[in-house]
Length: 165
Image (tube, rainbow, N blue to C red; front, side, top):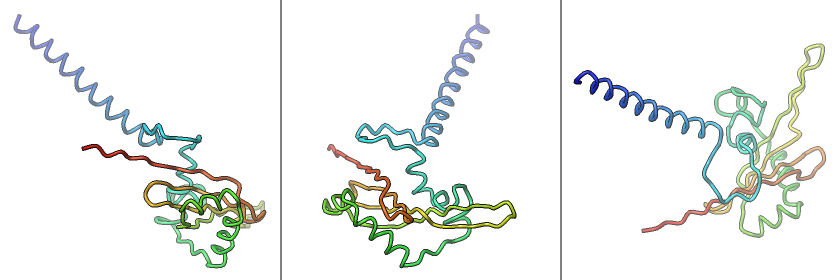
């Protein structure tokens, strides 16, 4: 009878440990894949939309290790930034955001890299992402096609926090 109690205790302990480990694995998976419980979403924003801008390395060469932070640093000329900002300000939707109190806080180029058959590497920043920020409540990512001088996409991210005593 004492052995049965030990076996039952061991089985229950094993199940509890597995449940805790499963919960931890689920949280890690959700964080790694951009899953949140934010119900105040007005558009389909994918993980790659945000990661393309926020992950530091991704906007420049599309992979890890190049671009900002860990790889080779990129210096963006003021003329390039001014050009992208002027294109952004000429878009009617971006103008509406700026009129609502959003401010342009950052311009990040997306550098396309092409390797030709002879091994020649060509790089060109044909697209940029502009970050607009409104206090602590909202951000907007504006994709600008520099070659066509137009805004191609705007993703607006808002956050609502209700503090309760």
